[in-house]
Image (cartoon, rainbow, N blue to C red; front, side, top):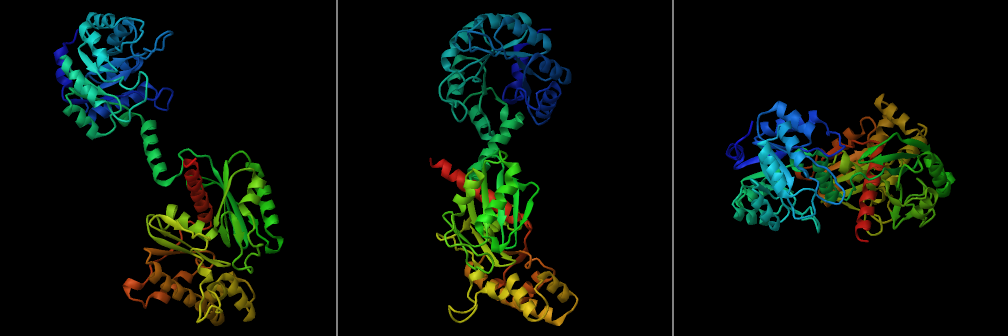
Length: 523
């Protein structure tokens, strides 16, 4: 029944060993999953596997005849040694099918001497692998007759945890005349290759291959570092306060739950609007740790101004963040609604990865600009307010919002005897009504001219069109016809928004979380 040391070491020399140890209590902590990990690792080119626990060793041995490094982990009073601490553990592992038995061989108070563990391995016919933390540990292990020296415990017996593997220990242990198995924090192929260059006989890799939880955490942390969004952050209460309606939803990771819709009555004023928001959000209290509000108008340093009182009348400098935070009892972030929607489309919608401008054509006209991955807001919050574009020869000329917004269409339709219903106006145009077609066509031409100028000014990859008017039947086609006569290099790429009414909610929640994390990182 005994196995020759030379046979095992020959099979593993110059090869990869994969440690198939799931997170204790995790979703994959069961023998069937461990067997699956082991067989997948062997199919991928591993020469052997490292398995913890008698049941797991038995299950893997039944599935493969390839070399198994076995160990058990057992906490004991009065010692920090917990990897195969007792001679009886060595015998049990060999009986379960382990070819190599790994044990803690560090110079710490221990329940059994290293020599006793090596003797137990010899008696059972197993290869003895000494898991070490530093070169000082090697003397007792070699004197006891350990067959393999492992760097497994480097960084795990006190002091600061190193970021990467201990290549210096690999090189140092090669001087003791035993095969060295490099193990501990090997996360990349280049690190494994460096261990072989340092003199290792084999490299043991665990978490980077078999622990889904750890691998996911590394990637989540990397994404967090790039975007500022905390992995696992609690939901944000997202709010989009527009000229005619307000939406509320819990937003988490770029996904919103079911949204509540409230009517925004312009005559009520901001105090009443915020009261209604707080009342509607009351059932969610405790489910979110922060709130983010996108609102029409100009927002800077938490205060709110109306740029077009005909859309929403707002007292100049209204303390939006303070007033809403007092009602909700959580930190609040605020952003112009078009800027928020632009960020939403950039992060999750039609403009992902692009330099882009988002234009919302609804009751009013707003815009947001994302260039080089950065949302432009301006130090006064004014960046992107296309509705304030002066469409004439002087500063007194009407602004674009006055000429081509939903409110402008409603006004012009009423003056022409078509009522003030913009949806009805589009329905009439679709049915061929000449007056409706003329009014909508004029608004589209005015907007197309502004979009052509915007393209020349910023040269974005695309201009994304959203809003109730912008996405009304046939309107985007009219805008495209309005710019089709331009040379290719000057013609904007006009795209429909992908997120609809969710853009502002998703955008302000995501951007607000990023900004809060930036502030937290500086404290």
